[in-house]
Length: 383
Image (cartoon, rainbow, N blue to C red):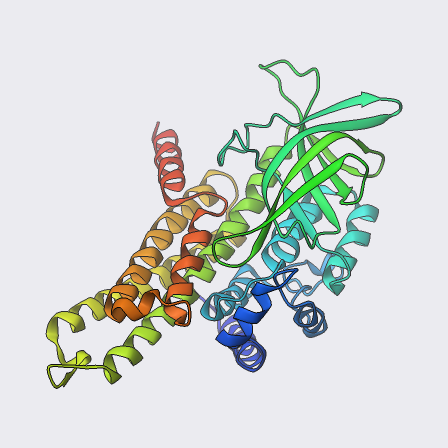
């Protein structure tokens, strides 16, 4: 249950975010921003930092606002409503959580302050081309030579690698036996020699990069963590990222429903408003119910992130991501169909919601992956 103070804080963040986005991020403005590099508004980024949004997910111990997961997800939901794209998920949410939990205090304090001010952008370079979504499948190696650690390998789908100043690179320490593998995490400036990035625009207008590492030096204190808990801590951060993605999907679902309601209330066929047809009313009710289900799941996921660790948290996050991703995609497809051929035009926002929902659904684990993960975790818990 949400206490009154949390509810009031969520309302304040929701109102502030909605006002900011309605003023600065109309659909037409969005199309202009994503058409040019770097794929997001640097002016907006500075304003968001001034508003304290970068500090919201960072704990007070590191100079942040220490906002609960519910507050962070409230902000992400508003991003979803307006199709807002930026490095916020990569840097302020995912990377900040990894650094906060894993970096030594002096290093963590310094980089988190810069993330909170918007001065630096850190993108997690975690997943690899051969791994799909398996965090344990790491071919990038960290070997010791010349008094430094050398990183070699490849990473894929690094969010806003074009805008990042630093990359968080997950590597397997060289020389490990298969029965005892040790991993390490490195904070590497993007301009380090041997780092090669290939940038591209994603389906929804955001940006991502593929990264190649060729004997990239990681010197102290750039290696921020190594040991058996590396994957565990990164998995927890990815749970937060997936909870944030789910919240964005909820926002997109609600906006898609509103667009469709407005459309059927104004369009006519056979001399009657489309909204008067009972079959369409039933489909709109189904869309509304999916929105309510997704909102409820998102709230439970926020509670799980703050209250649980380990398998309990993993199960809740995977259940929510699987169900919300499928519901959001179905709502977006219904919206396109109810708009008819007009829904496929680039000038219509509803088609852009479909693209955004599709891209978010794939990010950090698609519905099939999370369904399989949920099933595996439940079976393990039952045994």
